[in-house]
Length: 319
Ligand SMILES: NC(=O)c1ccc[n+]([C@@H]2O[C@H](COP(=O)([O-])OP(=O)(O)OC[C@H]3O[C@@H](n4cnc5c(N)ncnc54)[C@H](O)[C@@H]3O)[C@@H](O)[C@H]2O)c1
Image (cartoon, rainbow, N blue to C red; front, side, top):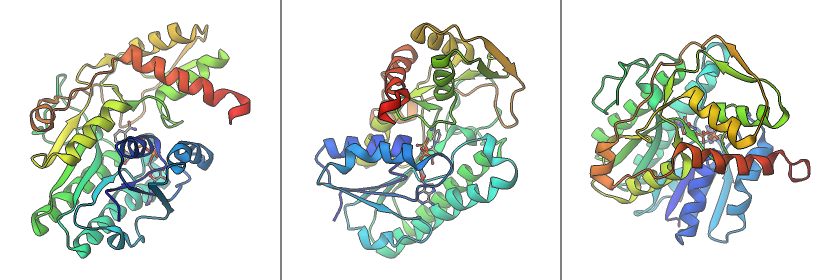
């Protein structure tokens, strides 16, 4: 049996966490459906290193149907990343995908946990998008969620499902609200990935809005470390923010990217998309107190690391 199960294991954050668990000597099962939101080729690349490890098993499967209860024993921990990300895509005809992968898949997973009959620790990758538009300042977990996008609504619905199952079946469930994650393997639809791609060719860097919107960008290794600590610390129960706690204006990050890459790319401004709040800013004191969460990587260093990964990705031979 497995020490840990990682859902969404071929994705950006899930694949990074799976490698971290393997490095700790765990036996890990990864599950991913290769949802077509972005190319399977990138997801296979994310998986490659973990697949070399004999303690890693991988199943291509959709969580909605997968009999996960057969893979659980008393001490297995579940890291639940599988989901449909992206705020902009959640408007319009793709909404069904958000309902399926964020709500139905989470409900199916919870049912499997109940069926297995163990007090499984399940740690869920929720999102700062549940907060929506809030006054400028750090957001604590007690703030009333106010999602302003269909994506945020589905992530909040999944949190509520977790609460219902935790209450009804006395399960130790944790939801961690991630604040804009970046670093190696970042999804190709995310801002920094696009900015680096444009910067590498001298194409215009497209900014949505004024660029003054504050974002609490959080480096992927800090998220992975926080998620792991939350999973192995019994006193961690309920909802926690995982952010850097030090937001910067979007244009500051773009300035770093221009310096790091040495690009001459001009800036082009477009309207801010619907569902994009003015500020995201995590108050992380609860996570620090309950499981010692302490993000370490600042934005400049984190962007350098993402750039060195992305240069490798952009090299024609390695694609
Ligand atoms: N990246 C961020 O900044 C961020 C911020 C907040 C929350 N999150 C959440 O963290 C999680 C991981 O995000 P990511 O950026 O790594 O995304 P990702 O798209 O790279 O990874 C998600 C993975 O889940 C898989 N998946 C989707 N539906 C599935 C299903 N029904 N069954 C099995 N696998 C399925 C996809 O194929 C994909 O590989 C998501 O739930 C996302 O909502 C991410």
